[in-house]
Image (cartoon, rainbow, N blue to C red; front, side, top):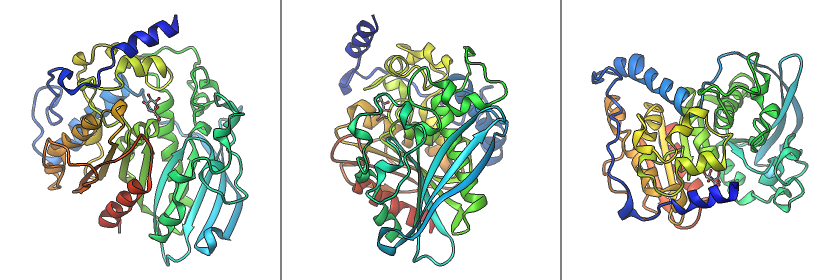
Length: 408
Ligand code: GTR
């Protein structure tokens, strides 16, 4: 039956621009009561809070404010990593509520040549810290055994090294920190009990509350915990210059984290697609029906009501991206990544412009996306590069250039 449903939704996937429905986007600066935001104060004290409430109650679920106890243990430190260019640290995070604990490991590279505090990129990896580098020893990430197929060769050392050009990042004077996202919420339906969500005092595994937070909410929460650690404990990193980067599903989580936590000064969405930077109302590529069926554990239950009914959504993703203003936002797409709806990703970023304008900042100028590999580095950044759904050196080069412009 599941296969039949999946096929049904697959049949309804549209990747033809001429079949994109007519739609009207909600105006990001119009409050729920119909009044228009005219000042930064109105935006920050009224509309911004309304939008956070919309995304908490209708898409990602509510992030609790309760604090979970966490301890940090330095597992290893090597001042001569990456041919002496970096100091590599591995830090064990133990989250606990007294009855139960969940462990995660942060892999951190600090640039040795930087005197004083370096800016940092934070980002999750898909396949464990050991997948990001050939360096040794790298500890296996604690929750890898909970993944779909732990014996698969994708988990081997350095399998995703190309997505993590540590040396290039270090050479540019940035620190970089990564963690396996499955350590925060193992990415399979039915594994909530193994996620950080299960540590909260009101956790009820049977809860079907419409605004119940889920995997994307948990990953976003976890990014903020990495920021806590860095700000409180890493004297070689500048806590005021944190860039958060996420690819694909982690791009969705990075945007949600950046919307909520103003300590992220640059938020980078790499091919985040549906539920990320892409406008839902275009119903192009992956759509709400498909994503909530394939990944029922990502969003809050309320989001399911828009399956096959994007037209009825009282919000869209440009309003999520606008919550990052006046901090910096970068959205990137890939030419062959129709599934993520490249044009929808561009428009999601473009339609933040009125909020950036309120702050006297420069968003994207044209509703028409730029040509392939012609990056725009206004206060809001965007590029579309050749190739498939991935993170490449081209992407990293743009992120480094953009951060040099706004974080150095
Ligand atoms: C796909 C999913 C996308 C995107 C992608 C990824 O299967 O449909 O929404 O998140 O995975 O994370 O690589």
